[in-house]
Image 1 (tube, rainbow, N blue to C red):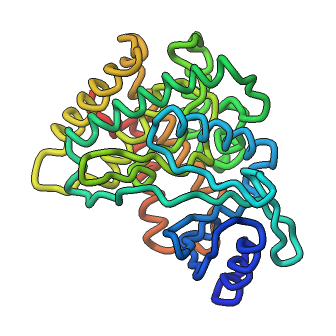
Image 2 (cartoon, rainbow, N blue to C red):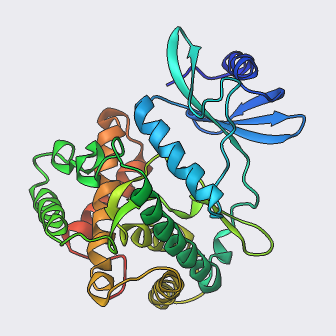
Length: 320
């Protein structure tokens, strides 16, 4: 993690101006890996992280650049002065990988505006993404982007404590069941991997841009539908109605939109609750993977207990 504060942001601005063909005037931290860069000709975002290796990031950026050229709403990458999409800069005496993106159009929608119309369009765009992903894979051998089950974040038993035997058993069963699903080109391939609603920008004409492909992976396509449904149910239901009806409505909308652009067999659609459960376990495991047990706040403990009860009692976030 980089040091925070004005001094680090000044160093980042200096380094980026040395490497890229833009004149960045101001840098501010969005997260510890993403920085908003104001330039004379507009706004950019710099991703500065060694979260993935150089080869993985180069392959990921080649993928997103292909999607951009094919007309999908993704942020374009700005090549460096050396013509590279992924550059190396030195911060705190450490070599760090950097990708500079032109800011995407649109904005994050308020919670109450995540309605069935917007989510149907999101489903359509995810379908288009998967259709173009197949085209990319036909032309490029994927060498560095992992299959989902090879990524450390899915190794749940390494992080969920041994005393939580019920959840460990459920996690083992869910992963094992999903691994046994037959793979084919219509249900498995490159996906975004993290299309929660904060990674989607919407403009006034309902044009959508998907950002943050850092977690792209080879996975069952339906996982890219499970994540936004999970996200909408968990974070974006604004109240004022029945949450079960909301879940049914948005699920129907996303699937309808998706099927306008890409096949989704009834057999895979029926497995949606299973992939929602995978996402739930993923989130719960991350709390253990990245959280400090000794420094958890009361709110963090409350959220973890909420997850535990829901998983142990097999309460699905998705109405079936």
